[in-house]
Length: 224
Image (tube, rainbow, N blue to C red; front, top):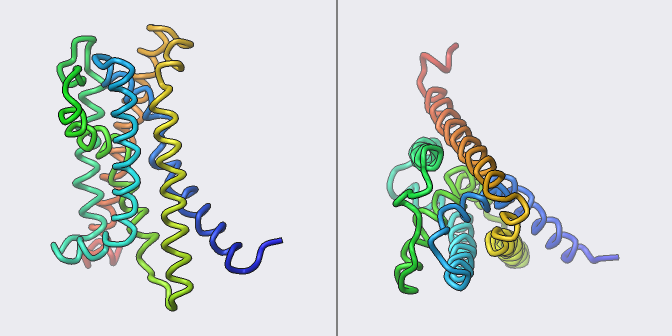
C-alpha cells in the first residue's frame, strides 16, 4: 500500500509518539494543570495550554537533535539529568500533594507576558515534559542516520511525532475543565491528590534509575 519511504516515515513517527506519550502522560497531567490554573479565566487557560503545547514541541525537538551535544558540552550524562530532573519533579509533586485551596503557587490572572513566563516553568518543565521524557528524546536522537534521505525522514518523523504529542497535550489541557465538571469538586480533589502522588512516585523512580546508572559506573558496584 505504501512505498518504503512512506512506511518508514509512518513507523518512525509512531515510534516517537508511542515512546513519549506514556512518559509525558498528558492525561494524568491535565488535572494538575487545571488545579494550578484555577485562578485563570477560560481565555487565559486556553492561551497557557497553547503555550505549554508549543513549548513541549520545541523541548522535545531540541532534546532529540541537540540534547546529546548539550550534555556533552557541559560534561553531563543522562543519569545526571535524571537525578537532577527527578528531584525537581519530586519537589513539585510534594508541593501539589500538600497544597490547599489557597495555594499561592497557582497561577493568577495577569498579562499575556506573565502567563508566557510561567508556561515554561513549571507548566512545561517539569510538569509536562520532565527529565524522563527528555532522556527518552535524547535516546531517540542518539544515533544519527547516514544519508540525506534517511536524515530527512528522521527529521520529518520526529517533527510529526512531536506535533502529535503537543496536539494531545493542548487538547487534554484545554478541555480539562470539562473533565472536572463531570467529576465535581470532591472528585477533582481525589484525582489531583492521586495525580500528585503518582507524579511523586515517577520522580522517585527517575531519581533511582539515575542513581542506579551512576552506581553501575563505580567499579566496586559493577563487580557485584
